[in-house]
View 1: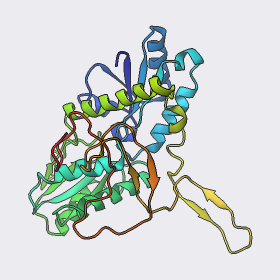
View 2 (view 1 turned 135 degrees about the vertical axis):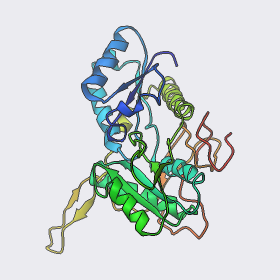
View 3 (view 1 turned 120 degrees about the vertical axis):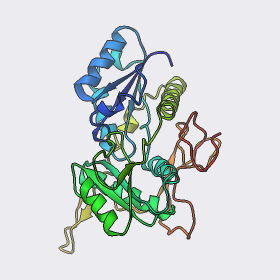
View 4 (view 1 turned 90 degrees about the horizontal axis):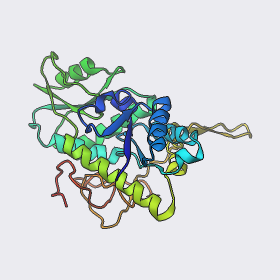
Length: 310
């Protein structure tokens, strides 16, 4: 793509600060809001096309919706030629990448899946992610640590040690997870993605967004506005005869989301293009089965997984 690529960061990347050193200098990194507006206006004033990529790893759907709302504030000339890409990754991708990291860790180590704390529902997603890493891996102990939250890093390490692990390996489940230097009995199992792998995923997101815009004129904004619609919880009051729902954005559906791209691949790595989603009934996976992942096509230069890259 010719034009400007803008990566928007949220709590997973410390407002995009943690993306420095991961993304190349050609990618503009912003925290959203006024920074995003300023960069888009600068690029469009110079005649550049713009692609905006929300850099969530799946735990920050509000970042996607907030980015879309920010782009709506632009005038027509600024929005023309500006596209919003799909999020960098989903939690299914995150599980796959963490499982890949886990394969490099000796069996007697405990895994501590670590990320900055977000809202309660984002934090709950991290526990779900850790459970899937444990379910489909070989490590007996997999715990969670929330930087700036509870349980914190020290508590996470204490729990792992109390369960008998001689060493604890921190697996970063976000961009902003520093190496645990000075923490006894602890090693670093990251980074989550190499620079080349992150660049490959980002390039795929940008390419797919540009192709969609050229084919149909879809700039991706309308779809992204609903990204956090199911983030939160819904509940109803009864039995007073006046049941009414309070939708806080997170439905209690427990099925898993499947995405079918063109040229399906059943590996754990992500693919940027051609996704569509449907819900399937909840079911318990049989022992030894693969975790629910997105079924997608090939993406260039992705992080190594259990399957050979296409």
